[in-house]
Amino acid sequence: MITMKDIIREGHETLYKVAEEVPIPMPEEDKELLFKMMEYVKNSVNEEIAKKYGLRPAVGLAAPQVNVSKRMTAIHTWDEKNRSLHSYMMVNPKIVSHSEELTYLPMGEGCLSIDREVEGLVMRYRRVTIDTYLLKEDGTLERVRLRLKGYPAVVAQHEIDHLNGILFPQRIHPDNPYFIPEGAVPIEFNLD
Image (cartoon, rainbow, N blue to C red; front, side):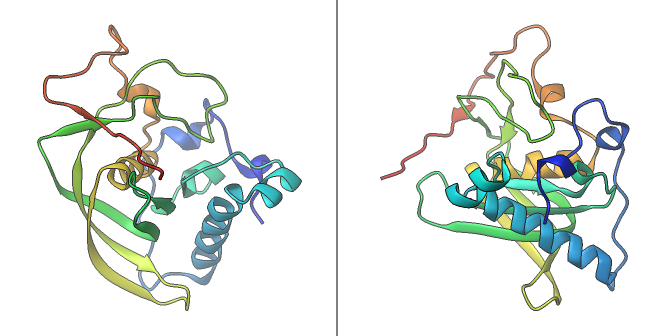
């Protein structure tokens, strides 16, 4: 089981490397790690388990964050309207297209690998199309094209950044952390 002690922090060299492609067919040890990564994300939002093991809540986890420089990420989150669950174990994801329209989280982004408060807004594409393999619960891989928008698109971009050696503070405008480009739309959560 992955816990916070397994997650490397800002400053660790692995977080700044471009991760390697995962061989296909996928090695068993990579599958096992990706299943454990998804388990962490799910456990982190279960109050009882999170408290017992001291887990910080997360909606995604990328392999470089557990010091494995491979292109794998687990995402488990609802959209901003709390209507659809987006749960993916992505292998070798690649953003193949995106909207011109930008979006951002008004409260800023956070990261398990960053232990400090980071002031500023991160601009992301409102919609992205991702070509990826998905690891399924039965251990098989399926090649898919995902079209994500809003909050799930932001989460996917944050995680794919990890695979490219980028941490979210690097995406914040250096001179004006709260700069909002013309036309950028905030993500508004409706949790009714």
